[in-house]
Image (cartoon, rainbow, N blue to C red):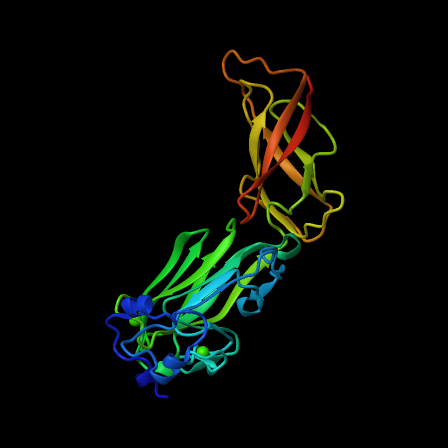
Amino acid sequence: MSVARLFPSVTSAVVLCALLAGCGTTPDSSAEMDPYAGGASFPWTYTAPAGSLGPQRLTAALNTLSFETLLGASNGWGPIEPDRSNGEQARGDGRTLTLAGVPYARGFGTHAGSEMRFSLQGYNGARCTRLTSDIGVDDEVGHRGSVVFQVFLDGVLAYDSGTMTGASATRRIDLDLRGQGELRLVVGDAGDGIDYDHADWANPQVRCENDSAADLRYAFEFPEPLNARYGQQVTATLRVSDEPGHTSGPVSFQLSVFHWSSPGAPPAQLAEPNRVYAATTLPAEFPVRLNLTAPYPDGFTPPTGPVELTLAARLEDRGFFRRAYLNWNVLP
Ligand SMILES: [Ca+2]
Ligand SMILES: [Ca+2]
């Protein structure tokens, strides 16, 4: 069958779909004989069986989505085709996914209106951080078709391609997934009906990592108390280790003075406030240089007893902090 015959002009797809008893998941005989006269879509839907909503195989690596478990899906023209173009209404009748002459071994061939839902819950605690995918209208419809690709994260629109046609250059999605639980990939018809709307998610990959905030179990501590006077520059040794039973891997962080227990005292300052501390293996020890500033403000009497200085370790690119407590015995 020619593509043109299968995609007549669409003027009343929604009405026809409502009227056709066959707007289900399998073609009926009348549809085979008279393929979608009037431009009806051929809707297909899928819902994962109950109990399959647990962690996917999304591991701490690059995961290709066409290997992952769909939580649910719908498509405008037969089933969504894993690793093939949408083709026609039958399952498995697509071709190699191809965008602007470039073939893709992995991805999804879909047809507007289309939707796929994935859990972003990683396997064995892996935290998913980035989505990348090439997108475009498959070459199997030439320069025809007009679609909009959208990505929703936890129900919130995170990406919108605007209208893309078969003549559009391939685009690449690169989205931050941190903190998100559900990924929804949507293709719309760009408002002009679904004719030739063969939309490919080409090589869609989700990167996941083990070093999420939930899984990073670093311990930041100063094993030795500081014995120093005000006005000195001192070096304290910060020790970073994995909490027992955890392996968090390389560490990279910056420090700031968060708090100390002597209100009114002039703050201690980091001698190297912009320094990045990094180690590939743990435990690791870092010399931290501190300026214990003086002179004091008028009327301030330096404390003579122990002071607790709290340093905040901001882990690079992770957006969270760990605190390290340094006990300081103030020398007279
Ligand atoms: Ca097909
Ligand atoms: Ca369209």
